[in-house]
Length: 129
Length: 119
Length: 93
Image (cartoon, rainbow over all chains, first blue to last red):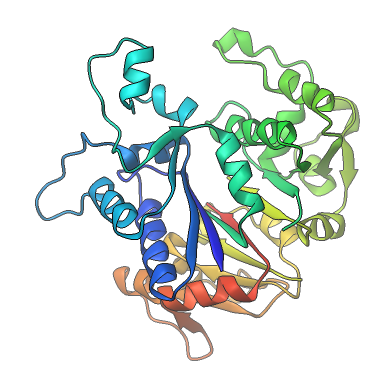
């Protein structure tokens, strides 16, 4: 099956982002494909390179980055959610004349059109929030 | 998969971001030529309340944005009767073009086709 | 055609009117995160249109919850399986 996962919760707010990554790992282990990861609303915080966690707690943004790279997943961070929360890639940093970049390069900052497009090529969409 | 998307809206318009996020998905889906079915249940029916003046709290007016959906070809807007009754609302309290439906109809709408997004 | 409802909130913070309007007799319900507290609820609260109800084992264990004999648990692999058996997933959080 081809899945799209919509992640709508920050790593710091409850369990949902963790549930999403556990689901993604299980689906991939079973040979399913993840067509699209889409980080929306508070979920964009999962792409922050600036998250520092205590050593005995999981750094979910780092875990997502590893999962995305290892499985060559397509990951989009919603642009309108991202820039208002300070999740900025090089392109947005240039456009808005900002001094820092805070988005993992394994994810791309993009629009809702990418989500809609992914839905057409997906058997199941699951949201976590 | 069919190019139909069913959106479930069950949040108040200004209590969080999710009402607006759902609306943004509706606009994007319409722009990319999907058929949108927009189902308001629970506290989501408050989004449909007419005469909102959101500028008072420096927010974008939500119902006014919902009223523009028709220009995007989205004319399938449903509200659950039980949710309205629970909140002492009736059709006259709502913006135009909302279809009031019972729970059996909601289940039929959720039975497909296409994906469902419930934020 | 049937749906999988994934419920992530505790019974006391869940709007039953919404949920019960949405769950059809052919559907299944999976409780995750704080949703697993439904396992401790009385029968009236678990009175959904479907008896196909499952609880995510990792979230039960995390919260120190045990199931009654007739209740069914599954792990993340089971969660994935369940999504393949239903055409659509509806999240409630």
